[in-house]
Length: 231
Image 1 (cartoon, one colour):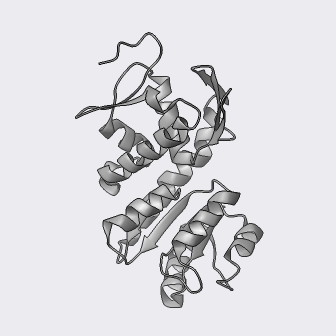
Image 2: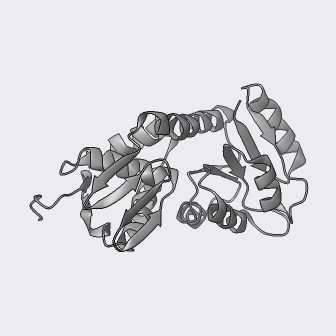
C-alpha cells in the first residue's frame, strides 16, 4: 500500500480526499502541526506528497523547497490559486504536477496513479547506470556525475533524460514525452513539460552538459552526441 502525505489545512477537504483515496487502497496521512511539516514528513516517509500552497505558518512553496533538500519523493500541488506563475514556481521548486481547485477527483487519482507507476515501477526495469559524454547517470540515485561534479535530478528530470538518451541523436516529440511521463496528455499542460526540460538543462549546465540537450522548435527535444551535426 502506497503512503500519501496530504499537506492540507482545510479539514473538510482533507477528510473528503482522505476518504476517497483510502477507497483506492492508499494510506493517507495528514499534518498535525504545520510548524513541524518536515518532522512529520520524515516520520511518515511517504511515497508521494500532495500539498496546498496556502498553509498556516509557511506556504507550500516553502515546504516543497525544504522537502526537496531531504528527498526526491514525488510532489503534487493542489491549490485554488490560478496564476500561471504559481505553476511555474512549483515546477521550478521540484514539484511533479499541479492541480487547480476545484478539481475532478478522477483527475487527481489518474495523476497519482501515473506518477506512482512511473516512479516506482521505472527503477525496477531501467538499467541502473548509463554513460553519456563520459558522465555516469545513476537511475537509482537520480544523479549525473562527471569530472565537473554531480547534480541531483528529480524523478521527472531523470525520466526525461533517460528518454532522450535512449534515443540520442533522434528528436523525441513533445507529445511523446508528455505521454510517456504522464500516460495521458489530457492531464498535463504543454507548459509543464517546458518547465521540466528547462530545469533539467539548467542543472546539467552546472557540469557542462546542458548544451547537449537541444530544442527543435515545433518538433521536440534531442540529446546529442559528438557525431551529431549541429544546425
